[in-house]
Length: 375
Ligand SMILES: Cc1ncc(COP(=O)(O)O)c(C=O)c1O
Image 1 (tube, rainbow, N blue to C red):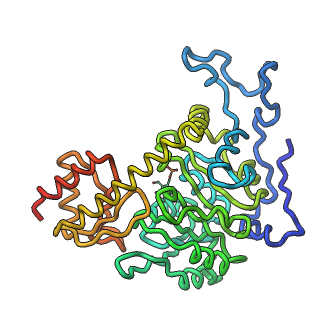
Image 2: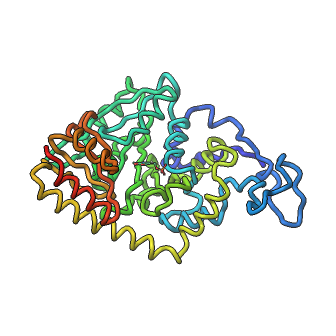
């Protein structure tokens, strides 16, 4: 199979994303795995991939490499997220998509990414690993919530001295919990067209009233969206996520030149079919509703406590909670086998902890411990 890249030369809007990719990816050949070269046909004998011919008992077929991007699973993702299958590249969690995108766009020792702290920590970790720099345009705190400093983001991302390739926006944002409006994100994308690519991390979108911006992908050439089955689909253990992009040539480049030869474990692929099946859809929806109801209950209950100074509005499956003795409270709950995430030493989330919404019984344990805690 020839893995050359077809770049449509007559469509400058669609070409936008290619202007930002590291040059060598445009010309290098991708790896052609044995499976890619020969296909899979049950009637044939395959002695071309150095696989072991003897599967272990109970582990049939696991002696064989998996399909890199099974077409039927791509279709299931596409239907789930409302895009074409050609606009999806499946990854080992959204985490792998982050590494892959940083690697695709950022030239080590030269290019930088832009984040808005408090932000998901992996954006900066992946950039530093290149190594690439990180420009931080912190979120603005106003009226007890966080919002994007969109003017400063655009200014910094357009500054040629900064060499910004990727602008990360997470909505709903981890760890703050709130969403940013689609209008604001669109405005940033539009202002940065020709300057930088916007990576919109929608890991928690299923818990949000704002929903996804996938419908805007076709008209927004510098937008890439990340999704995951780890959160709303209760599937963190199988490591399945994806990136979505309106430009199918870009997706083809990612699949054939940047991702590993066999990025998805066979068991994860099989289980993902089940997770995305119509049978499980009502269960997934019911679980989301249970989490949302508990999020509201916990917000209201925690607000009653004079030990809590603020709870940030959340569109995700967690609450960012501000209190005077955060460290001490996290230590106290840990002593009682309830583990919370202490964010108090991070810039922008001073005095804050992040509480993942659990089952009603688990959440009650937190309320009980809060009552017992002597501040
Ligand atoms: C904002 C955000 N993006 C991405 C991820 C990674 O998700 P995955 O489990 O799909 O790798 C997480 C995980 O917590 C997250 O909070």
